[in-house]
Image 1: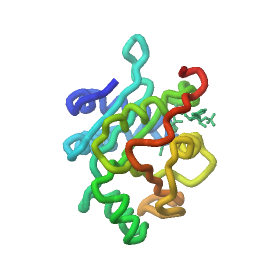
Image 2: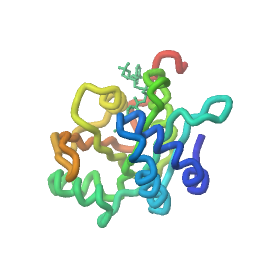
Image 3: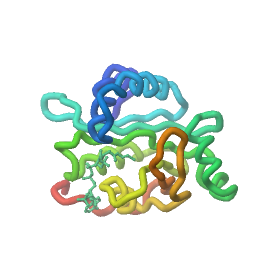
Image 4: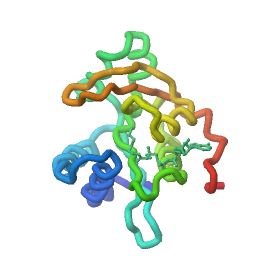
Length: 183
Ligand SMILES: CC(C)(COP(=O)(O)OP(=O)(O)OC[C@H]1O[C@@H](n2cnc3c(N)ncnc32)[C@H](O)[C@@H]1OP(=O)(O)O)[C@@H](O)C(=O)NCCC(=O)NCCS
């Protein structure tokens, strides 16, 4: 389901609990992260999607907003990509800020469904994201949807892991295949 700004802010702590579990972070990051994420809901182009079970329990979520100069991630990525990529990809792009599924429900198509719903009808020319390098489920998902490299092995301040910056033109071209069990 789509979340508007108020719905997102109301459940942001639950969402950030899933974020911490999915990323393997300590629960102590939740409050701080919830504060940041609530602020993101005021950014232009904000859009969010949640997956819940029949009892309304949150299983996963994704959100993003228009990437603009002055935002931390945007300014970091401008430094990581060449001028052409900046002009062709970053301008007006949708930054996929978070996409996470609770660990016990990963790998059955929820993340893909959330992402496709989030990108459906997005007015942006492209979607952009960064993800840690490695053979992860996130990588397989993004590649299966046609995301291409904008930068590789980029180091963000405060994180020792190298990240890839990936992008895909919108509307997505590679969405015809459905994951197993989702047909
Ligand atoms: C990344 C994440 C959001 C993906 O959500 P998910 O529900 O687990 O993933 P999905 O099942 O929708 O999609 C990924 C899987 O579907 C497969 N898949 C995707 N599209 C497919 C298609 N058209 N046909 C067949 N399989 C497909 C992928 O290969 C992958 O399967 P695999 O890991 O068994 O190889 C989730 O795994 C997660 O929260 N991970 C930890 C946190 C994280 O890394 N977040 C992203 C940070 S950038």
